[in-house]
Image 1 (tube, rainbow over the protein chains, first blue to last red):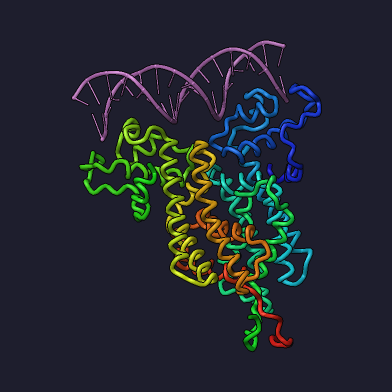
Image 2: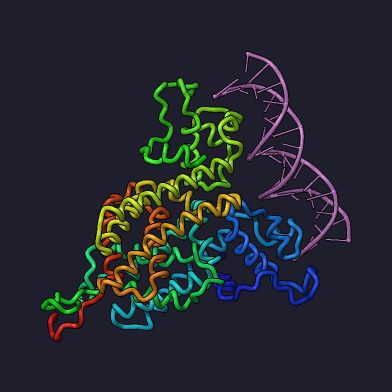
Length: 227
Length: 227
DNA sequence: GTCTATACCCTGATAGAC
DNA sequence: GTCTATCAGGGTATAGAC
């Protein structure tokens, strides 16, 4: 199911209670599902899955609590939709980023930059995706962990390739791949859109840091360069 | 209050339902508060604050739900104790690590290594400390954010000093300090004690990564070194 | 300090009319 | 597809005996 509706709500901006109709009434709806998902993302991100009530979510959309169950069988199913689609969007992003470049260093840069910027720009989805895994049903957890492994695989592949070409010097590709992704992921935890740095700036900075972390260092210079 | 009892439970190992008495009976107690805190850390870390019931916590210690309220005025107060003391322990650790070294590079290395290893070793406390801030009362949130700023200050100071001495080359000390800490903090989210790397190993790896991220690069060598 | 019993509220989810 | 009304269950916290 997540695949069918995949990414339908993935790239909307951040417009919480957008209600073009004026009233909180039906608003010539048809897209209640989508609006419920958006409201749930906000609520789950701000308060957490368990602290959020179905009333919270429904009310934000201007619906009664009961209406939610026409679109989703349970509160948990709503979370699953968000988590699965969110993970798939992240994987898709990473794969497309990697494909825009050829060298392993450039590929890593692009992946880290875009992955990081995504975690800032869409920090609410990202928070839900990364912090509410324990609240998912086992079967959904497995699906999500599968996607994660694929994302890690893309990054680790660049590190291995970089080692092979001599452009990188990464002793433990597995651990460093995890560290790089962890660094990007955690942006979603602390990012505040009112902060002074834009999502794109953070992405660029993190791409630089990643490059520094993995690049082969040139042999030490003769000595006595800087004072 | 957190200061009085500070760190009393901070460096215990990970022994969940340790009950030397045998039965789940009173166990010649006296330290029920401490045991409740330990149980709460486990539960909050595994399921989250809101998903944890006071019954959960009390039962793990072999007490009735009501007994909890003799030691803590509310479930939230329990969380506050954990969060405040946990933050103070982290700050204490960072300050003592920094004090063991003199140069800014060595100081940064020591701080990152110990801070990271702590987040792995005590990943349950760390998870609670970092992921349940929103569940704290406003006043406790402020206290905790204060401590955070101090920790960031210690790291940023090393970056500034390193820039000044020429050993480092960090364009945005604020952002990089945050990134470094973020990297360490996120270890608590994914760390699994059954994994193949020890907390100390991860600490060492992260200290290396941090060094690479901030070190001034020597001027490019003549060319044609590596093939 | 701990227990049993329980008050009281809120939550997720359902029933049935429209 | 949405509403109103409501149920059944479980949550935090308290009362009062021991």
